[in-house]
Length: 417
Image 1 (cartoon, rainbow, N blue to C red):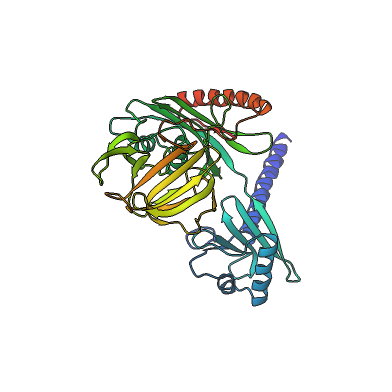
Image 2: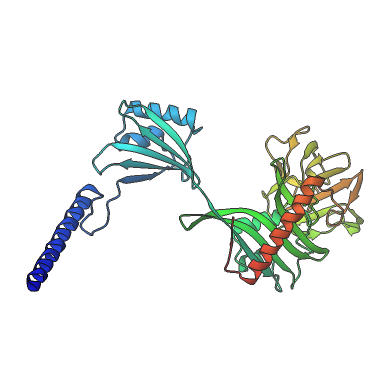
């Protein structure tokens, strides 16, 4: 009897195993025939066609080859303009994804990718009407800390590259520090610097760099520190350790990375005239055609030519400060007397007009009608924090400083934002 029970148990078990094997086989067959098909190499065939917009491409030229009709093109063009604010597609930047249920099926969905973080999804219903939906891709943003030290013969740019700071972040840091530093005179071997900045990831892959969050540089005139901060009214800016605006109304060096060839001096032998007279500005060497940005926001009060300055532009920034840019090869289009310019806007291009021995920018700062040394004059800050925002900033700064301290001890780590 016991043998019979054991036999029945084994038989039942065998049947269960066989039934399970058959069931798994059926599931596998279902998945093979209902899911994505494979090619001869065993790789999945993706029913998605990606097209990168090229020069000369038109919307119809992109859609018609995918099997869409002229009516579809008209409808999609209209809905992109009205619902997605897309009137043109940018060559080498925008992409279109055409999605089908299988390789021979008509397009069921179009995804217009204008950036890694912004996409537009177009779908068509059974009646042939197209609908548009904007998609915001979530960013995986991380705060990364890099630090370095100036070595003999280094420029800040070379030292920053060696520290692993991306070029785009270095350019932004350079712009920030240019409000406080003279990169020709203030950079010496042994100086240390650090940058806290954002890196944006998607699906574990780095897409681009974000904002600079904090900067520190051991300048000759003392530590320069700047922090990115969002005020209660939603506006943002950079502030020093005490919450004062770090962005000055004027930059000391309008052209980044330009070498100083002649300093501000009350007694300088003029290289063309041959006699000694005051040099009321600073000369920056740059090649002909280099864009000259406005050192600060203001209004153009002079745009002319004279024998000494050649082509020059003069900008009034407020009741106290004016700047002058001389020896231009030409003026920027649209820059005339009375034109309002923003900080960083190109106002002209480097040249060698007037009394000049070679292409360079002669840059002057005039304070209350008197020429002052652009490298040493105290420049007014803008966008200072109010009392309430300053209190919040000081607490925020402590958090940032603590994070920087931890990251400096563990360079491979990052802060998840």
